[in-house]
Image (tube, rainbow, N blue to C red):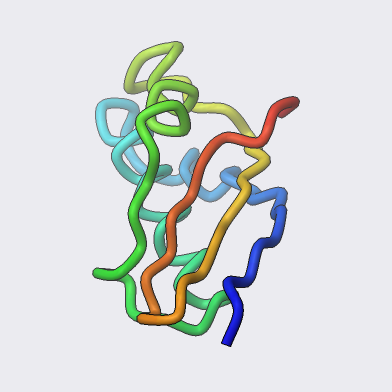
Length: 88
């Protein structure tokens, strides 16, 4: 089985429902759960790249981006690696 590579635009507007000091943490969790659902793998096998993490945390904890483009690669063992894919 070959590696599967896809690009997703993940909406993060639901992060605005939590208190300000938790929004970027919630955004990271939403990225992880979105990729686990769409790539059909458990959440603990989803790895988020440092560049994607820096994009989410760039404006601090209280103002994460509303959406983010992610390049996700699923490997044969079921692991998924996510990295920032350019424009927001």
